[in-house]
Image (cartoon, rainbow, N blue to C red):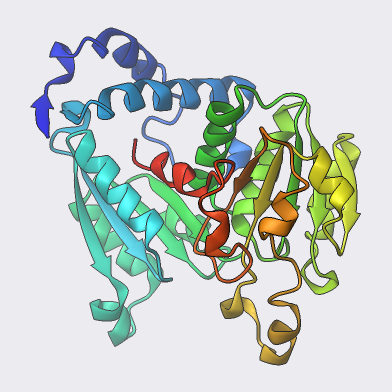
Length: 316
């Protein structure tokens, strides 16, 4: 992979101009509620420009000398790796804190960890099971905090890349019928994407087991803005036929205190080849991953399965 200073890149002019206008410069990224239509346009424009450059296997020295701290109190494959790779593609570095080998094991509090790591880094991406952790971290952090997932509440960066994936796969977001399937109660990626879809003309369908329904407040918001379509405990053939996007999520065992309930619902809504037979030829099937049995491997070869292309959006 070659290294190219931003000033020498043919993409430099447009990208430098976009970055100079960034509303996020020096700020925390805690929630998708920070984004209005203008902010979304700005962030997605930067993402597209960076993708052009990184697809050519070049390192853009946009963040030369900048270090991103990664603090994950929950397991992560995609989010942690994608932040690491993305930083390296734009000239930065990462300092990854393994929570199991940190002073957390000696009883150190989250805020003390943030204060400490913030002395060594220029920004911190934080994942934590407590929904309020990112807000607590932002209060004491000397550097910007990026929310890498706060409990079952939000996953802002995943929501943004999902929005970009839909736009790149289908050419638009307005006018689409988007169906969310699976664990909508604890699915933080679903929560973030639904909040972002507030700014578009879409129909949102919600299909989940009764015990895993979307939080009532978010469902009300979707209904109040005139976007709510079908709500059901089943994924009907009619809903499948009318969907432009099916966004499937796994039932998250780690969120259940009663494993008997988990066993009852874990396989209740699957998207397998028999379901895909009813779908439009130009629809896309998305999944934030990891998956269990809700989308079997037989679906992977279907060109409408976009979840691994969705992954590429993370670091390009």
